[in-house]
Image (cartoon, rainbow, N blue to C red; front, side, top):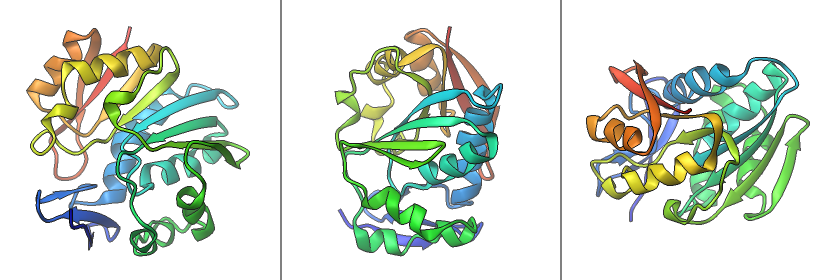
Length: 221
């Protein structure tokens, strides 16, 4: 399937799939969306004190943007993060070169490149506060139990991949979380919220990032 790089409203890049008319991130601002959904309402929400250790699962490693901003934020918050990124279709090295996240975030380009260059299926300690394990598999293959404090649910939208937003997938997410673990996603569709509630999540509607009225945060109680 053809993929092309486009620039979003905040100046940061994303990948566009013409066949689906779908992007990896919001056209209204890739970095803005990632910070709002996953950092503000995810990582910062569950970080109560420095020097704690957190396990994060990302559903859709994609461009590596969410991993990069989490790496940067972990250092600021002095929180140790063990990050697992799951991806069925990794992007290629030419696409990585065209992504401008390091320059837009004024961060070290070598760190961003390392996120993509390290081997899959192996855990790598990239900074004192951030380790990364990339897993090349499909989301329905996840079998973790009581393992994560936080899930970034960043799959393609339900319009193009409705099978990723079902009760069966959210049951896997619920089981993968520790008690009081949190899942955040950019989606606010009623069918998504109901699927989350059906498997036991407590679900909140929160103000969305630019271009979206609402987003969802689900907690395992």
